Length: 336
Image (cartoon, rainbow, N blue to C red):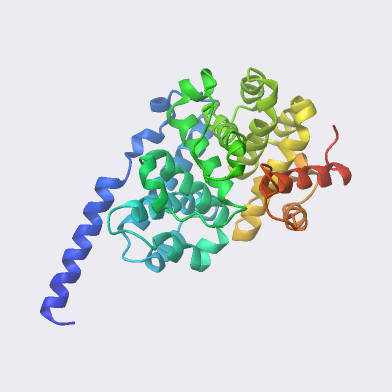
């Protein structure tokens, strides 16, 4: 490398570092005290704040990296319990980069890598975070191509709104009357996917206190509770923060929504199995909620994939979720 090339390389590195500093949200925004979230215990607080900090670290890594491959090398250094959250943050970062003038291709490169493909569920959720942060006019720059997994982006959108706009989306139970995305006949399903993200965020809002989550969901209209329980079940299984007794109490209190809770748990198990990041807590939660170990729960999810695309206003994604819930009940792992 000659002198001029070295100079250009250094300038590019300085620009990427500056870009990271400008675009990365402040880590203080993930503190439970700043958010006003419930603190169940010091351990629960540490867990949730580590999740938030790791998400932002993943975001910063891809924003500063010269390529998706370089970002992946650094993401793989994150401790396995939290690595999925780093990939979620990286998904958001890739989408933000693609939305910028002269941006493009970072999402595609990110998902093409081994790490991105293994964490595809988390990446799509991260894309939804970007949608929540960007003007809607920039959404068209975000390539969300998978017709099945695209709904995970709205899950991420819902999580973001409930996490950062808790009063409106949780306490006041706001629900957009007509969401503008996606631009096809399945658009009516959008509030359901958003509610799944809101339910997932409730796990954080309540500081992993399952009894608080149950009471919070009970305050919502009955028609929204299935999606909220599915999201809460996913968070309880993937993020953790409770012991076996708390998990069993949460399942019992879910009552008629146990199958939805189990479906969310099966999604969480699948995300960890496919990434090779199964942790003891995921094993425990999968057994309690689904009556199955994570590998078997992931297999159920794979076998339940719909064979047909979207049918009218019912997305294949919702058919998939219903198939999973029905199979878990049929196997006897979930008692209604």
